[in-house]
Length: 402
Image (cartoon, rainbow, N blue to C red; front, side):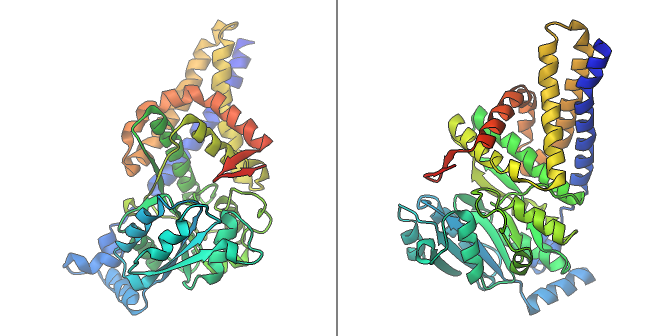
């Protein structure tokens, strides 16, 4: 009996470990190219250019790629000036991008911050309240901005994010090399904040999501991305009818679109793996804020119709439940100890193996020390968040959501 129970306890962690090994290989296969050769800065280095790089550089100079940067903002007067200043410091020419800020019915002076900002680039303020029938929320803001965007690519981020000076340059570099089949690019996001145990644990969990999303894209089975850092073609958005079918959901403007585009245009999703592309955003400052955020994310899971995402979610859940169940079972079946140890070793070993290069890329390898702690907390945490997400009901940006 103990052998059968042990095999059952070991099955999910073993399958999970195999999946993480595959994700690790996929992550490692994502190229990290030198922007000096790959991107707009290749002439800045002063040396001779390889023939292909020179041709690409000439093409860019002849017809520079333009971007529309879309920012949905609600009550972000304190954060937005930082982002607008960082966009002013981009190393791509100011004439190659425009910035559209959509004020989503803010009750502070968000609109005034945008109106008064002296930008070297084209900056436009759109008041969602002034657009008849536009509705409220991030999806509504993005759709209104898309209707007014003038560039062939839109790049999305959030008003409380921070970007490096080569952020747009890294997108331009990738797209200058990519073929016309690319329609959606996901970028990396890093949680920042005070150096507390909560910030490091939440940052570690979030890094796992970023790495998993990137590896899934590299493996040809995209599952997740983050709306704080992504780009897509407006014509591709229109081709899949944008947010149609999930407009009523306050979350999921990023992943539902990812799934729809992958279904309509297989092979059109790329991940931008370059340090210059990392967008930083502050993690939740309190445990209550963290749970509120995760419940918001979890509320969209039951609406997924994307089989790879569903399978991955079930596998992660089963692996974590197996570890928790193994510890509880030791109380009346001590003979299960070798099986429980093996299950924990598989799960933790796979997490360390996968997360090490991801955290190295994000500059936070020291977070690896928190992997065992996160594992101990994860089963009750995931159960609480999952049940709360199924039940629904939370407050986001000052709005109650059912």
